[in-house]
Length: 338
Figure 1: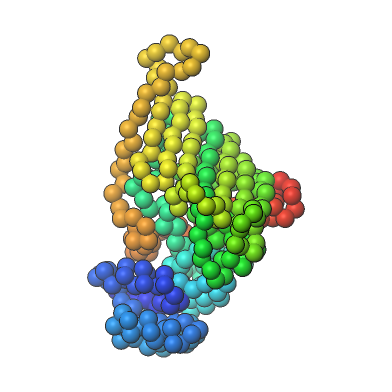
Figure 2: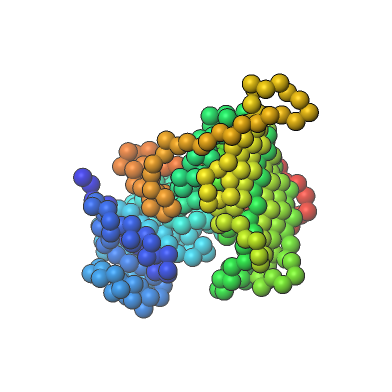
């Protein structure tokens, strides 16, 4: 079995999750650690008993190791440089979202992956949960018929501190991509237009707009609406959002934590003023691991099978486009066509 030799770039808190994953694979070996802050890199290596060289530049790490894969766990502003350096240096890349801080840069990174023939897969851990897989299967099996509308509510009030609280559009830029990507995953459709209104409500501790309402038209003819806030105290939703999908034959709701709840028209009853509905229990044929480990399992499987991963950068770029077009709409106060 081929051994994947890994350079870890970025030594913040999230790096531990990626290292936990690498340590439990029998065909993965960490061969180097990179961070601009050499003290942080050394501290991480020591805390995990990693007897590997420490670098402040990824280019040096690539020259002085035999790495084949780079884990990009750096801050968003560094993603373009890190990923481009790794791809042109002959490595495949698994990285945290977003691809880049603007759509042009993200497109250039994807083009670099295509030109080099290397793989670049993006972490979308919220696709990897048994409940969302059961939700998707209900939709794929057309239990509620043709999808007409998808609605997602996201209301939380986290006090992160740091870069998020200084961002211009913290909710849309840093968090909404998860929900936008989930909508694409659930429906199999891509966005074709968006109208977005961003705002910063009273009591917000963010410098930029921490809240937004978006209306997307999707390629299958459905409408996806998103209402969200990162400065909302009380009655919190889950981090997975609170969902309702309506179709031609019923509806599915999912609170992001429990199993989805489905009610479909009971055709054994005559149609009256209100339709009789029956409860349909969700099922799933997916039994993978959840969260980061599930997504990383898929990334490594794709690499070894020489295929595109479910979260390949070319697919993820479509979710990124939803983010940037939403921000463009909010700035211009106009509907944006993709």
